Length: 246
Image (cartoon, rainbow, N blue to C red):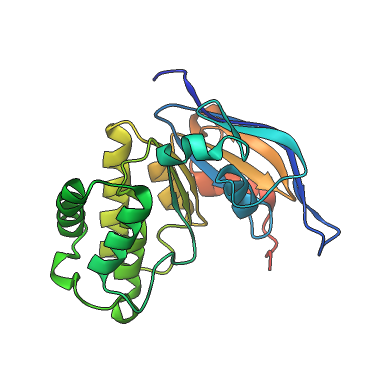
């Protein structure tokens, strides 16, 4: 694996004015080219906040974030074409068809019209949506929306793909299509930064991960680093406890 840094997070702190709690508290992470990096932790521990800060969607209070040597958010316009983002909430227009959604996002990415048509057809077929391309997204099933949500995040061929709970609440078949697609993207050189509550899925996908709790990093490494643990779930519970986090 190349040691080129794709994401460099140094001591970031994020506080929301609506809460006394520090959402992210001194987080430092380095993610290198080609990694499949998981950001894990209970509800409310700063995962989505970190993801949004890396994407330049929210400003952090202190520390620094660099993507491909561009400082976020200062140089985001310089590197944004290298980044794909698949949010937990659907980033789709429900009153447009799947095909129309892809045309809108393709135009936003500045994809050449001839290349765009080919890309749209290829991705719709690959993710099992070609026959549904003219159906309104508001009429899509949850699995279909999740697949389209991924497609619009990768259609510009990003070098870094950031995913926040990309398979939440979907059928097994759709989950497999998405997971297979992510692994293929990674084999082709795309670095993945991923969050999920599905630990079996995370163990399958991630080559390395960090666990957050109360906004702090409490573990970073891979499962093989902890010889006494047989599964990611076992390690996760040993770190975060068995109490429910609501």
